[in-house]
Amino acid sequence: MKTASYLRVIGFAILAFFLLEFTIDSGDQWAIVKHPIIWAVLGMLVLFALALEIVASALQRILFGGLNPEAKERYLTAEQIREDNRFGWFKRKYEDMLGAKPMAKEQEIVLDHNYDGIRELDNTLPPWWVYMFYATIIFAVVYLVRYEIFDGTNQTEEFEIEVAQAKIEVEEFKKNNKDLIDFNTVEMLADASDINAGKGIFVANCVACHKDSGGGGIGPNLTDDHWILGGGIKNIFNTISEGGRAGKGMIAWKTDLKPSEMAQVSSYVMTLHGTNPVDAKEPEGDVWVDENAPVDNVEVKVIDSTKIELKITDDPVIDDLQAGGK
Image 1 (cartoon, rainbow, N blue to C red):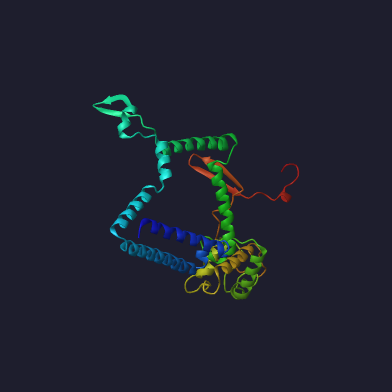
Image 2: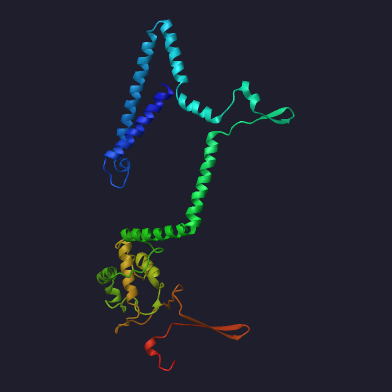
């Protein structure tokens, strides 16, 4: 087969692809992705097109073989002329735009420069180069007007817009894929539906050891500042998932609860802090302080050249302040 045959097959395959895409309803996806059977259909169509080209080429050879020598010569001559004239208009137009001179007339465009017998011809620049140069000028003018005169969105603003959009998409992804969270990505859930779901899980699985108030029984008190394996949403989630201390701690719940459910019950446990139930168990473990918690007031007092006193306090409650600026 000739090059033209291969080009026809490729063109037919592309046309078939787009026809299938436009005629098959696949929603937001590519039809070929949603319906993989289309690959088989395209393959069959390409094989059919190849078969047609092979049959046409074989038929042409048979007919050519049946010609007498004189007819064969005329046919070959006509084919050569047709080949030479293919895209003839474009070739002629390009040559006219190029303004090239035949070798017999190069004397007309020879410049006066002569370097060791090497002379320079004053040829016209290639059209593709000239028009590309013009295109860069037009682009520069449009860019200048758009971003410098009319205050278009610059690269920094585009980056900030894309980051904001990405955050929205990430939050939407998290909302629709709650079970993809782990110790590193879990966050405190504030929605009432999540807290209530966590409370239900806690009542069903945790009250036997921690009581319904969270004050502790067999298990430790969950309402005070003391934690055996660390407080905060991440540590609580990890303790629920992986279990407590080996041999005497809580069992691992990761095989019974989904990650989203562990996040919900962890968030509910966080809400028990500071409730101080009447029957609360004595504190166990160490006082846990969140290193990432915000600080309201920091007071630094210099004692001497080698010591300082650092005092960190929360803002006082307004109702506790006395009148008169105290």
